[in-house]
Structure formats: C-alpha cells, structure tokens
Length: 117
Image (cartoon, rainbow, N blue to C red):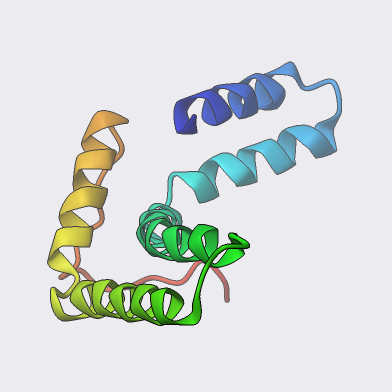
C-alpha cells in the first residue's frame, strides 16, 4: 500500500494542474520517505497489532472479567517486551523496509540537521 500511495502522489505532483496540490504532494512524498515517518509507522503497526487483539476481545459481549484481565496482562507483557528489546529490532525492520523501497537509511551516528530555522 505504501508504494501505491507514493505512486499516486507522484502522479499528482507531476500533473501540475493545480500548483498548490502539486506542492502538497511533493511535501507528502518527502515526509513519507523520511526516517521519522517510517519509524513511527512501524512502531504504530507493532503497538496497534498488540492492542487490536485486546480491543477485539474486550468488545465481545460474552467476555468475562477474569479473561479480560488476563488479556490486559498479556498485552502489557508484549508491550514490555518491545520496550526491553530496545530499538535494534525495530531499526532492522525499518532498514529492511527501506531496502525494499530503495530509500537511503539515515546514519544514526551523523549530526542531526533540522529542516527549519
């Protein structure tokens, strides 16, 4: 889906029917190819994947409180595992994503440059 969205934005950017839309599409393309966006995207996929199971279970009418508490505990443990494993597995996942879409991976040891003033 990521590639499809980028492709549509590229088309909008190149059409130049409306200059403002073309500029906005260019900004979105730049943002979507940024390390921050992809890192946040993968982090949210991981977190929402864990919490979605809990959410679906809690929405069932036949759920009892003991089972619900166990599901909350399991979700907490999974989130804690993500926290304890550090950032390396997430960074590796983002790096693989970048390799698939041939985007340059940011060097974590380099000096940070802000885009603003």
